[in-house]
Length: 212
Image 1 (cartoon, one colour):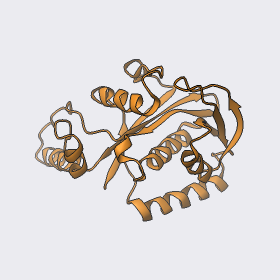
Image 2 (cartoon, rainbow, N blue to C red):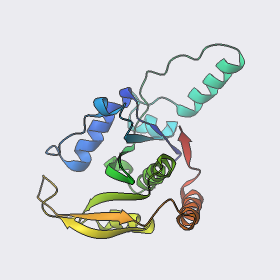
Image 3 (cartoon, rainbow, N blue to C red):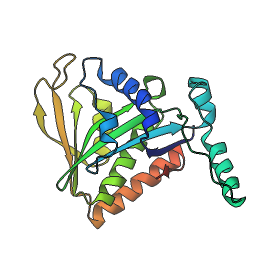
Image 4 (tube, one colour):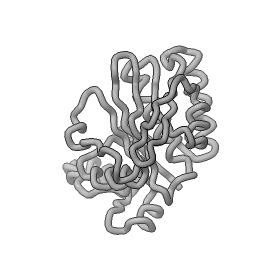
């Protein structure tokens, strides 16, 4: 399954809220995505699957990303102004990051339940880390449920370590959260490791595509 990353658009918000509720329960305080779109201290990325997967999951929402790019390229070669992109693509998952001083904090990362286990969560993590390095952040932090060992193992692979606990952090069941943070991500040493992790990801799941 081909999946590409891009920045959140207004037309994605309904789907992102749907994923947010599925992942964090209706009791979770929803993010004001419309207001946050123009926040220069935040980054919101979405993962969109290939046409075949999108059509199977949501024919009314899916757009055909590859065909769309080809059509826009043809328009450019012919000197025609591309049509505005208003229809929503199918969103498989998203990640939100807040920049606070030298720290990039992942506030939410979520994938549709029926599409988990396909490398989408890791792709979103990679995209958020790339953007954090580009922004100039020195470390990344996040919270994870104490019981979510799968997520914790993924974060540990990218050098996140548990540094503390937030008691009763999750509103649905008052579960504790572990606070995880990285070593400095702006060093040559971490850059080499991060490059290797991306190569490993590519070998397993395919090319990392980011439509800026």
